[in-house]
Image 1 (tube, rainbow, N blue to C red):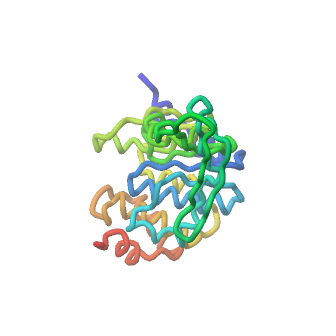
Image 2: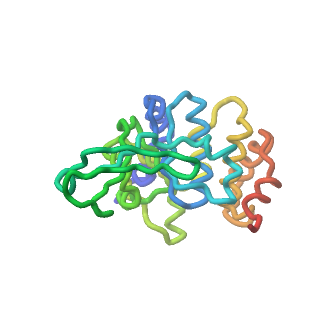
Image 3: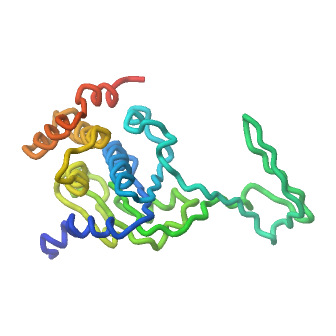
Length: 253
């Protein structure tokens, strides 16, 4: 049987050291709302530390877009590649036209025939120093839906997750990280303890973290502990408005 330390993964100190040593970091959250809110919190924190940070999500849900001042603020990989194997078709000329509506790439074929299934699309980026996953139970399953991000393979992973998912009947974490920061507390508490400092919490960060609390507790209706209330109090004193967060998260379109 695993001892308690093994079952809970690595320590917050080890995770902080791994982040401190990294410069180029990619964040990959699950699609759970709490994980998404906390990923934005990590994004703000790592930017403040001078890290080069990329957030890998398709988009934030409408009710969480208030956490980011603009979608342009969230950085994505920039070097996108369109690849056509020579054995399929030999391209002799290429040019493009760009207008307000679209970019069109024109190819002149010397021989062969191109079909949609022959074209590969992917990002060509330097392998990051660190990948941080938030609330992801199985990294391999996550990457199956991210064919364009093959450059993330083989990078060190900080795997942040909570054992509380098991009580909800969801998938057990596969412990795929170099560091597995997996604890019995909520995902929000884990991230809060990872990024908190001795100084005051900045408002934009406090809003993301308090949003995580609201989502995890379903607006303070369940999963309530003394630590949750203490953390919520600190975040509200740092400028996060509980009323505004609840309004945004639970407002109907």
